[in-house]
Amino acid sequence: MISKLYVLTEDGEFKKVEGIKIDYDPSDSSNQNTNKNNIKKYVDVEELSILIKRSKPSIYSLVHKRKIPHIKRGKRLYFEWSKIEKWLKDGEVPTHDDLSQRADDYLKNNRI
Image (tube, rainbow, N blue to C red; front, side, top):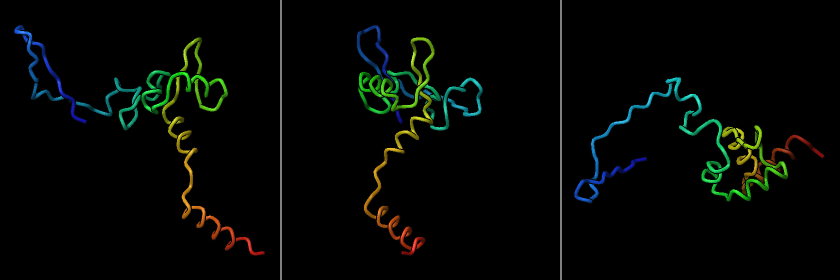
């Protein structure tokens, strides 16, 4: 992802800043709350709503119904990103080809 940075000059104009290099070392211990995709291990409700593109009230509703994995510390809610990814993947709908393959496998292994 390429980010653009602009600086407001004394003249009141925006000037594009170029040539900034950001070094990122994944083995750096200061990045302990991020995983290999540079997404935090734990996110709050606001960050989760942005990441999964759901409203905050819908996330609170899922938490209330215990349909989404979460951690509660005091009044704060946290979500472990790896569990959220698994939760999203578990909702995956199989294609017709997947269902057909599963049916063929079942019939092959379970003769009537």
